[in-house]
Length: 168
Image (cartoon, rainbow, N blue to C red; front, side):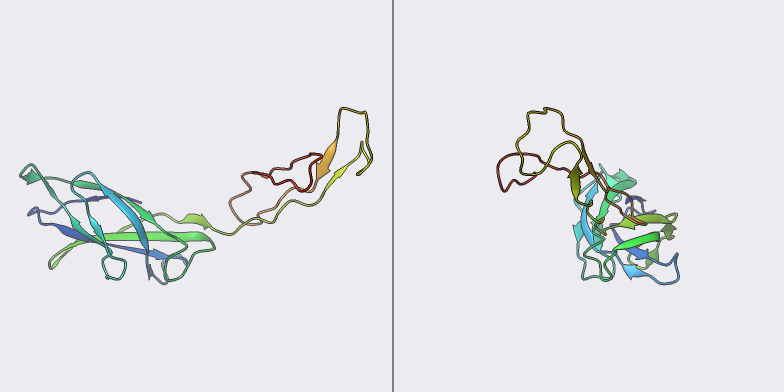
């Protein structure tokens, strides 16, 4: 999550990050894993209403907009996200009693669900357990499926004469 934080008086700010899994009908506090800032090291406290603290809005004595790079841990949040195609993020800054405008993302996809594994492999050119001098092997398998998820990045098979073998 990228955010730009500034304050008219240069006061330090706090930042609240919330997420919705139903296009804004309900909201949950996001669990913040880490935050990096252009100026100064902000603090994180996921037990507070505003999770990010001590966001600097000055640099070398002058006013500054502090660019934040925030990592939301979707699996550690109060309502862990497994699969959602209509996620939203809302973020706003606070400085004392000054409440900033809320910025909201467009809907986006979160996929923490594992895809189904590929089906069993079979060989049409060799018989399992039987030695062969044929150097070329043809193998087929049913591909993995991720349903409505974001897709399968890849699977590996290993063919060897050593039992058991583990694919790394």
